[in-house]
Image (cartoon, rainbow, N blue to C red):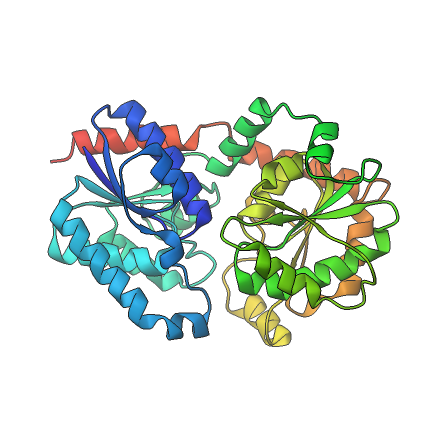
Length: 388
């Protein structure tokens, strides 16, 4: 069968590449065409556009690139119709993908399967109307989405397990590099444990969060070294520009490890993390963390979070557990002093460290041990073989 897959960022590229490998196991004749990235290309098929040409986040960047966004959307729609796949698989990236689904429903008979469902439980819950209308099958990777869709909105979905949990567990089983070798390879200080800095995968996130992360960690520089996880979509020159502009750090130096977030977390004792998938990855490695995320107009954001946004937490760890396991310092709670204080609580010897590690166990249990891409691929192929 022919599978057309659309992703809009690095995490989608990773998850989609694993789904593609699983689809090949269940469908020996699988053909792929996609908007995606290097990991998907490595699996095989034809890449129409790289996700880096699609991803614009924030009001101003989107406004400035509207012509490009509309051009890419038109190209995608035209290309899907011309190739006429058996299914279009949408991966996260709701703004773009829901528009594609709407077009498919109105103009073709090609089904749209959504893998990694849009997070409408947090924001834009009204999108359930377009999901009902345009999405043929929805595949969830978060257990708390089951009651949201099925009980609250009476919309049947497939919970297939969590791919991040799969990927971390697979990595931990296969990774053999010792702490000493990792330190030597990256020219790290041999006798200092690592505090990992996961400042996001987008430039604005890094610009907003990294300075405060570093300034809050300076207090612990005598015993620990800070190592920044370099995102695959960010050039080293951008990191250098942000680091050069950070004040109040003296001669404090930050080491950057590019495209090695998992090895970095494997060898870290604590982490400062922006919200998103990275919070779950950090928990899966058993690394205590502080979630920190700067926002504009912080008091207004706090009001909106308390009265408008439909979820209690911003980190996947807390959302899955349905309680505050990791401290979330965002909006009006985001400050160097707050981050530094919470970091002290979770470092070795800190009073909050063991409790956080114990609470992580609850998250592992809720996620389960199902292999998400294999489970999703099996269901997809079975549905497609039996449609009509």
